[in-house]
Length: 267
Figure 1 (cartoon, rainbow, N blue to C red):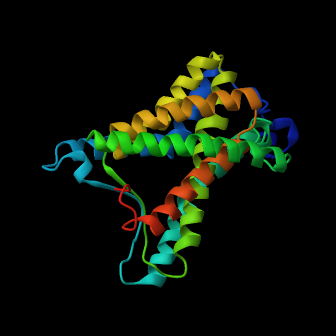
Figure 2: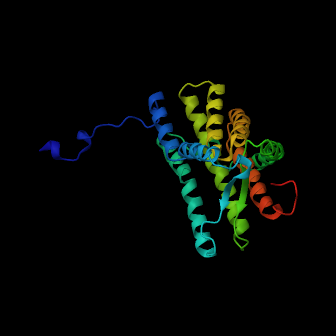
C-alpha cells in the first residue's frame, strides 16, 4: 500500500533545471525556432520561390509588411491587427519561461529596464546608423531588380493607423532581438559555440525570414545581424537592439504611410 501513498519518500527527485546539456539546448532552440522565426523563415523561402516563378519581375511585385486584414471594416481590422501582434510576440513568453526553468531570466540576456538611459542612447545611435544605410541599400537593390517593392505600411487612413504601426514596430523589435540576438546567442554560447560561429548562424537566420522581400532583404538583414550580434556579445544586453530595431521599423512604417506618393524617390 505504501507505493500508492503520495509521500515525499516515494517521490523521484527531478534533475536541477539549470543543468542544460548541449543536447537539451539544441532541442530547446529547435522548439523555440519551430514556433517562431524558424517557421517564418520556411514561409519566407516558399514565398520567395513564388515570387521568382511569377510572370512579373521581382521589383514589379509587392511585399506588404503591415497591411489591412479586413478592408472596409475598420473595427474588425483593428481587432485582427492587435490579435496578430499579440500572437506574433507570444514566443517571447516561451523564451522567458524556458530561461526561468534553467535558473535564469530575460534579465540574463539584458532584456530589462535596468539601464534605460544608456539603452536608449545606444539604440538611437544604432538606429540612425543602420536605418540610413539600410534605406540606401534597399533603393539600390530594388533598382537592380533583385528585390520586391517593400510596402512597410498599407493600413487605411483611420485614427488607429499610426498606433498600430508603432505597435507592429515594437513587436518586431522585441520578438527578433530577444530570440535571434539575446536568447539564441546566449544558448549557443552555453552549448560551447564560438562567438563568431554563433553570430553567423544567428545572422543567417535573421536574413532567412526576410527572404520574402527578395535577395536584397536577405543580404541586408544578414549584415544587420552580424552588427547586432557582435554588439550583443560586447554589451551583454539585448535592450539597445530592441530600441534600435523598434525605431528603425517605426520610422519605416510611419514614414512610408505619410511619404508614399508624395516623393519621387520612394518606390
